[in-house]
Length: 392
Ligand SMILES: Cc1ncc(COP(=O)(O)O)c(C=O)c1O
Image (cartoon, rainbow, N blue to C red; front, side, top):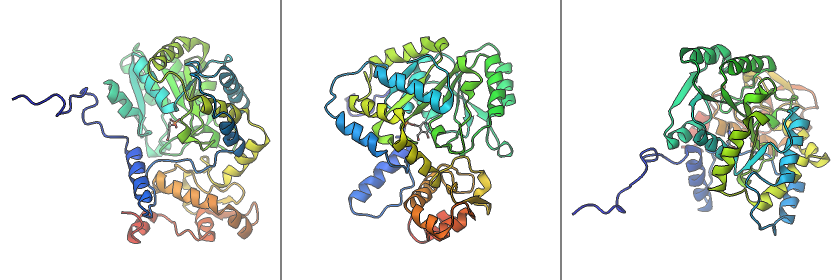
């Protein structure tokens, strides 16, 4: 007797054995334990510690009755607002409405991998989902090596050497600054040099800038300023606005890449149709900005500052009013991004104490900041937590 096709996994070979995204799996497991009344220190998903601004929550409430399917590219006023936002906040010049709204930037990155016929280039290390997305599609990933000596930044010569070895191929490069997992940002000059190489080899670039609105030292540099015609900017509501669970991401295209935007919109129209209507209406409020949102953003540097140098934790000091007190996602100092998230959240909850104990502007180290709010965290913290039985 032959086995029933229902009793064994008849799966696309690309998907056979594909585990759920590690971070999501940990998150779901820990939520289940919390629901059972267990105390869990979450070391999984990189949730943003910031609250969604109240005015944005109110906008969502008001939009609860919005029930119709929306245009596949997104609500027209939202696309216009996002274009304005990218101009106001990031100095990005894009034609109005050259924006695609999707259910998270993760999905839009996936759709691009699906749509684009070319070699996929990903710097190593990189965020955990780019490579599994490629696997689902059956696409090979070409890793571009980075190193500690250069702060794990993708060097122009690395990209150049790779492209020269096999010139003329269509290529898609994903860059991500501020970076997950390293926390590093590139300077404008570094990105200009990378852009020059990308332009020379006509590489299509996705610039994953999901963390750029957490750069509180000024405007985060973007490769799109130097290579606008070949760069798709990827961002969304998940980090600066604290609304990861709302699932709203954005791609901004140059006019030259309208063909790509249009292909992605076609795939979207046959799959998810459009992003949830109430969420799009609320996003309109988030991207409009204004005093309430600015006030919240001004508070954020207390909690996270992805621009702090990697060695801040190693005894260096920073003024209390800019003290993050460390990058939420920086892992340089032996702290996992999830642990850094826990630290940041704890400091977030203790901002007032920090402000009371230390006068504004006083230079203190991260270690002092943590001690001031009674958080016993130092290099080797995970060991400490493990010994205390707080994590397994
Ligand atoms: C580097 C990076 N890109 C993209 C995403 C996904 O963002 P979204 O919530 O818009 O799908 C994340 C989320 O953790 C991320 O770390």
